[in-house]
Length: 550
Image (cartoon, rainbow, N blue to C red; front, side, top):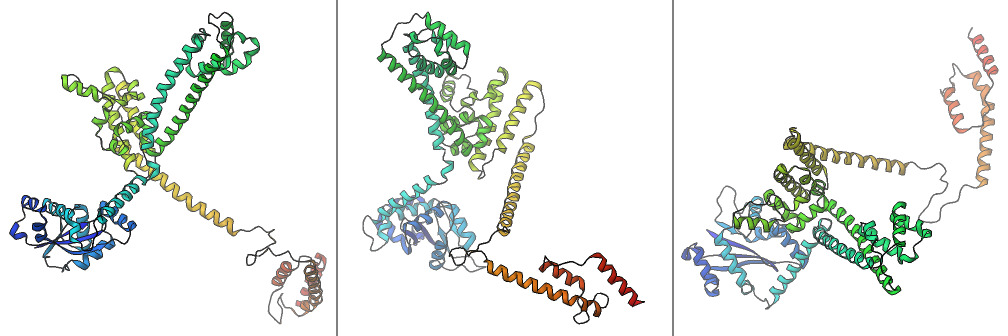
């Protein structure tokens, strides 16, 4: 049986025929030894056909399709033209060797070409990759390397740019920066306290918050100038009038030394820097919350934005976290304790980063290990949903959080929780209901837009013709002509009324057979100012008709 080998190079598709395999035998070791020698390998494998790519963009598209295990139209045409035709009902006398088993299965499904991917084919492909530049004629040295380098850059760039909104690298950098800022702000605040305490040591006992202390230190400046006049401003800064009075009283009897104006200016500038860092930390936290709601909404809903971001950063990415089993996720961040316990044959740790979750703190000491194991299980489910679900929803995270709450009640009060299957079914139903509501709202909005576009206001006097300026409204002359026509029509109708009454029978005209009701309607529609006969005249007419009938 003939064996064809498909090789996807950076410059195009190559199809090679491996013949003479009966002499060598399909032995992997024999092929491996003959691969490095071109003379021996060239006798076994020869180039059957080559289809170059049209451009760098075409090469990138083909590379993406092959990596996903899909056969493109170009590859299908190339294989159907070069390989022998497969007859229905007969066993083919050849097979196609490919590197990717997924690609081979897709080729077989579409074209019925038998494909194989094993160690023997991979060794042959390794030799083809090593000597491919020798198989193609008129190929300059260095061309294939340039094509490989360009395709590698474009493929990597496309992978990096893939789905910008769900790049978890931003979360990793943000949580690292947040932890660094917490340490820096803490150390800088202690430095402000120590520095300003030389001047006003009593203030450290009155104001405990670091950010508020830096704010008060900048506002007070020189304690000797602090008096009752500055009570209102100090109250605005502190937020409590009693505390502001306490600061003023402490400043009057302070034991601190006096500082020069230059020293006070430096203290104020450093306090302002600490305040700016604290405000930036708040903005960074808001940014982290927003990014976590975009990237991992269910994990953030279940365990919180900060703990979820720490899990993602420790695992390396959201995909790596989704691949972790729940037992690994449970002790993420406690690797040192784990390996120390394994080395000393002690007790392994029960929790790592998930210890910072509020659920672990709420559980009793006896149930902390159980709660950590259960929470890690739910976090693993949430991370996999966030990683592989295309829609951005928090329904699963909310349901998983309800399950953890029920498990806490079960440990404390003995209330039996719901089954996981029922909870997941309800979560899927809520997601489907939301999707159906969105689909219903969209067409209704479109219909309302169409109605708005079709209904035009009555007062629109102008229309645009051929993109020119709008036409002017009708002139007064035209209006006068219309009024004259109406008056003439009214006069003619008044003249014809008695003749119609004499000749008509039962309200029908003898000439055209039309009823008076229709005429009245047309009169009312066309002429608004038509004089209507009085009720007395109508009654007289009816009496005369009845007399004639008798």
